[in-house]
Length: 314
Image 1 (cartoon, rainbow, N blue to C red):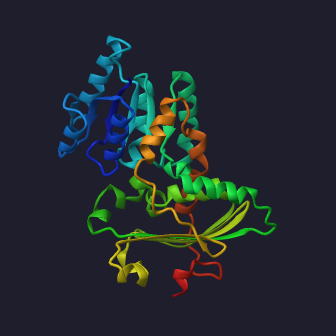
Image 2 (image 1 turned 90 degrees about the vertical axis):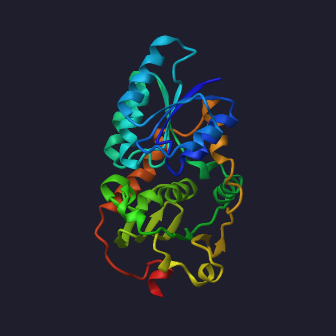
Image 3 (image 1 turned 45 degrees about the vertical axis):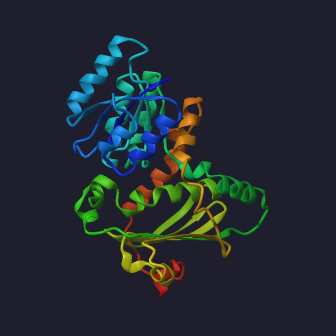
């Protein structure tokens, strides 16, 4: 049994990590969040220490580290806002723990190499959550794509609209310096998936970009991709509106829809099992998508073109 601590336990994604810690037979010993609406902890641990101040959390983890191997924290799960990931990974390594960090691992590419160096210095590992890579249907699809000797590039259309209310832009998620913007915050796992499927980015352009949406076109080694991401419910297509669905997610490859709406329930638990077995995804796995979303974030939109996503032509 390993000891876990979690940073950002009051956040949206934390329950998946709490569930994974419990289902893999491990122990949550400490949690921290500036917000105290964390009654969910009772579903997973009555004994876990909870802190609102990071400084007190830090002191507690250090105290456990100095006690014994049995009491120290072995893993720190990081579910904090994107801009804090880098600092919290560094904290985990400093206290002698492996880090398990939600996407994006970091916002800016120049933070990657120092983490690689800190891994080597500390002897600990940094893991990231790339759960789409272990989805059974997507693994099978990747194998099919890689076995296809198609001479021309695949044509991919990615559409993702996930409705968010006014709170979104008034939270850290609406601050591009803290979230990385829409392409980073809601799009990075899709970009990682496409790079995993089709290879390195050869060219990328941004057609539109504002606080609620972004769209563009890119060429990968084995595919061209038209992509559209939005948190604005006004962008939902008629099929979603008619079915009263607040989210629309679609990936087509050469005109055929990729079906992966099921099978998400236990992906975090499966990833935790891999990590505990000494596998899992690390820093280098995350690098290409982080570099891509940084480029997208810092590109000047060129407007609608012939290669734009179909939604821009409506």
